[in-house]
Amino acid sequence: MQIILVSRAGKVPKTLDLTNSRLRWRVCGIGAAVVLALASIGAGIALAVASPRDRALVEIDSLHQQVKMQDKQLGELRDDAHRQLDALAIKLGQLQAQATRINALGERLVQVGKLDSNEFNFDQPPPVGGVEVTDGSSAYALPQTLDSGISQLATQFETQQAQLSAMQSLLLNARIDSNLKPTGMPADGYISSYFGVRADPFDGRAARHTGLDIAVPYGSAVHTVAEGMVTYAGVRSGYGNVVEIDHGNGYMTRYAHNSKLLVHPGQHVRVGDEIAEAGSSGRSTGSHVHFEVWHNGRVVNPLAYVKNHR
Image (cartoon, rainbow, N blue to C red; front, top):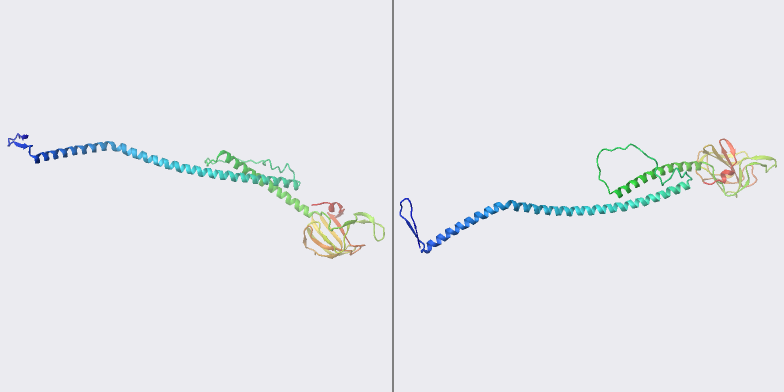
């Protein structure tokens, strides 16, 4: 088979002999190159058309991965928050138990201190008030149950603090008053002579006895019955060796007929301090302690004071 190519320019026609193997291979190669070129062009066009969609799919897949990662992190944060809330709830329960113990202690102190139970009622919060101040800002809100428990506990602690502070002041004042008031016996013995008119042990005449005589063995310890300041320690006529103590609030006590004095004027003494040793000095028939109580410059019957207890 031959192909004759005729030119319009009047040139000599060219004849292509397809029986020639070299020519056939050349024609096949040119055809194959044309086909490959066309295929490449088509693939390029198809890729250009499809690339936006593929890029979108890749981006969507990346977003899915990020969402999964954030969801995992959120789950971890949620679990951590739950653990923290559980720990906070446990701590709240412990604080509530402590508040219950404080309430029980406060009620016990009210009973021991003989205070007004209506004034110190640990079951009711004290009346408080004030102007509400808001700054318009919003804060993180705890779960309602937990937030309510914490608020109630904080209010309860404030109530307890206020009541215990007031109770402390009252009990402290009561303790000071109690320590300054003559109370109890100055020595371990029995009352051998009472306050008031009696027959004088030396001449038998009626005479006024200004204190109590407490019979004790010679050398027995004599204790102060209240806190105060020693104003006199020496010898007085009829009293022998005597100690006088000013307790404030108008009270003064006198301890007479001692064999030995253990304190000196100006010395501060507390309840129960040993101030002398009993004896029979002065106008006395035997070893005993003559005990007097003075209030606002007047001698009073010590019996009510020695029978009282702190």
